[in-house]
Length: 241
Image (tube, rainbow, N blue to C red; front, top):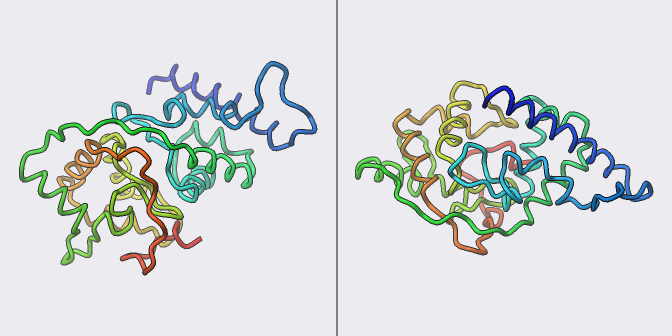
């Protein structure tokens, strides 16, 4: 991101943080004159990166946040605030917000039920396509790689209370996040299951599965799967809170 663009986002986020801080002090002060005091209005800074109403498409870099489980979104806000995830703009926005307000933000975006972009060609070879689909639907038992669907839901729309959907996310974003887990630049609450998964994937597998996930879609009205009735194949700190 160019320096000027980054400064623009930071300024907008800091302005939003002031509005958010106003919101946490409650209605007794009254809404700012001429500005409707709603969560949608307060979250306007978020859409600069995450798209209108948080529905970022696969064409950019930033991830869609609309419709993700509230527990997942809250965990990520906490991860940015605590430095387990690194993004200067996010850190500026979150550093003075209360845990209760972070839960309000997470709940707001989780409750949005918005259309996903249509399916598109993956651009993968036949061998790469088979590799990606095996990782998603079957995993690789001999390498202790669970299938993606075992944790992210059979429709890959996420799983309650805190596992995200992965379909339609930008492939560059997916590759970057898996790479960050592999190198230790991104962390989650222990035990960090995705760090373990990422380290077991080859670079070729990371590229193929990211491009496959990005090219898929989710049917209208699809919600994250209910919480698993049995233990997940790996312990994940974000699902144990």
